[in-house]
Amino acid sequence: MRRIFIVLRPVHYITIAIAAGLIALLYFGANTTPPSKKKEGGAMAGMQQGMQQSHTAIQPASADSILTAARQALPQHAAEELAVVEKELAAITDSAKMAPVLWKLGKVWQEHKQYPAAAYYYAKSAKLENSEKNLNFAGQLFLDLAQRGGSPAVTMWEAQQSIACFQRSMELNPKNDTVKMALAAAYIEGVGETMQGVQLLLGITREKPDNIPANLMLGRLAIQSGQYDKAVGRFETVLRKEPNNTEALYFLAETYKGKGDKKKAIELFEKCKQIVKNPEFDKEIDNYINSFK
Image 1: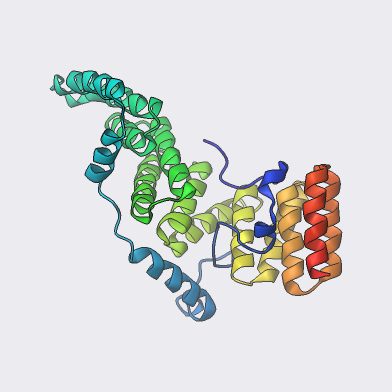
Image 2: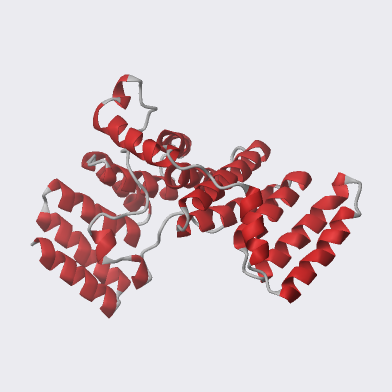
């Protein structure tokens, strides 16, 4: 599985939009202990409620509607190729033998760029096999699709399917932190269940306080909720372990900018430039610094 957190070494990962705070992950500052009922009040609860309301208003698309739309988009030769595999599947009476054919069906859909349909059949195959590896593959494909955006109803369905795959995978291997990170992203970005995602991240950092991906994600969430002191702690934890981690440096600079410490923010942005060593990146950072000097 690919990493869920952003690495800022390539220039295209850092834009003025990100610099302005339009980061994909949203809301809630990181703490090292689960929030109490009382702490869930106030601004954090308001942000969480707003995000949940925006998602709960969305009815997920049905698998049937997605598959029907995908089938209609296929050219004739692709439909014929699909029909051959579907006929093979229909002839199988032993469900244990269906998994490889379902996977084969997923590959046909993928070859013809109908990715939601492909992910659907990959997931069906993985669940039949109870394969951790294949569940993670399908779950990550669903998550990637959900993060691309598009129809809100389809995106919600993709996120829900991603969660189902990762939950099943975690039943097989509860210690897989990479899956926990992916599941947290699906909860937070996909279906708006912020607290569910945050608790997964906090669970990782309670067991492994210096876990880099979890601290980075929690730090970004803390920026979004304006809890800058908590964000500083998360990014400094990362930098103690990886002093040249450009993502942590960049977002730590954003944190100090949010706190009103422009001098410190500029110092960190400049350090980030020194590590990245890319003229386009330098130009973007210089323009951004000039926008708030």
